[in-house]
Image: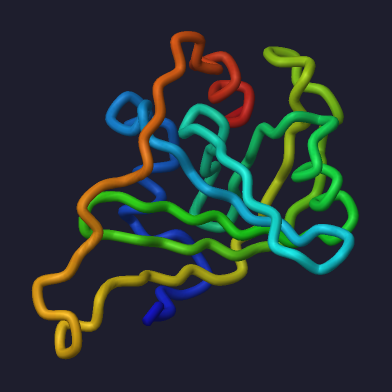
Length: 156
């Protein structure tokens, strides 16, 4: 069951998302969720090159400007990020808005600003699921990753 970690990124989350350790997480994905026009959860995947914490309260994201995800954010302003890794799961809920319809480093992307509203940490209940834990994050292979140019633009 998820437990509240407050209204800002934990030290571990900030370290993961501030760009300084992007190489450590370069093959992992961040699952993001919006709500579509019919009220259904809409998942999408971003890389650590497309999500950047400017401080413990603010996260910048790069999403395809014509995607359903970006349309949902424009319409509702709601967003949840899910981060899975060995022995840890985080959910970051917040409000988001578009700050640029086109990024200089990737014109097909919109730049979004998310204000962190709630951070949850999830793990198996040790009393009910002794020894259970998340074994790894969700990984991907991309021979042409977005690269540091997108991440650097998000951190500006």
